[in-house]
Image (cartoon, rainbow, N blue to C red; front, side, top):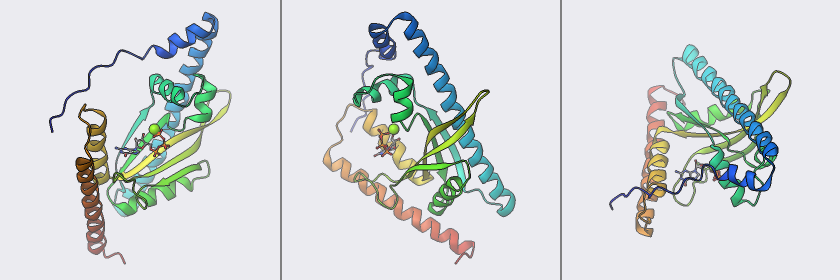
Length: 231
Ligand code: GTP
Ligand code: MG
């Protein structure tokens, strides 16, 4: 299979602004845009709050047990263009209120752990914190997706303290092992970055790769436990 780059789509980054301009006065558009800038600041702050919580947990483990449960952390803030597309798909208006009430993945934090047990430990410790509320939990490790995808997904709510108020903000946290991340990154690349339709046979091969990776993850966990004489 040769991988072809997707043709560059016509720029849609300005679509939200165009739609706003078509439906509202210039004044109203400026107000919405200002609110979106504030919204981005809010979600970016929430990402930093959550990352700090995770980094503190990780460094505490290093200090106490000379062990890091977290391999590394990635984050991303959903672009206004992606927010717009998702709202459009769900027949929702392009407003800050619609984003805050309906989109749970504006702020995204991905935690890459060494072992499967680290995933659950990190998730439990994070959600046990006083100012963290668990909104949604999807365990795609215990129940992998049909294509083989594995990860633990959480949506948490955490406070961000601003000059005049406290805002509760949703953050999507995906937690997975290095091996699961390897598979998910390549699968995503194959699915979204190529023109070639993934045939049923290739999809099955990809699923089998995920299966092999999951078995390896479990073996690595076992080796680690044996070496550390846990059990
Ligand atoms: P969406 O964010 O609209 O997809 O809604 P949802 O809440 O139903 O999504 P879910 O929690 O199942 O997955 C959200 C995110 O997980 C996606 O944006 C991806 O980053 C990741 N993800 C989910 N399924 C897959 C998959 O099959 N392959 C890969 N590579 N990533 C996935
Ligand atoms: Mg998403």
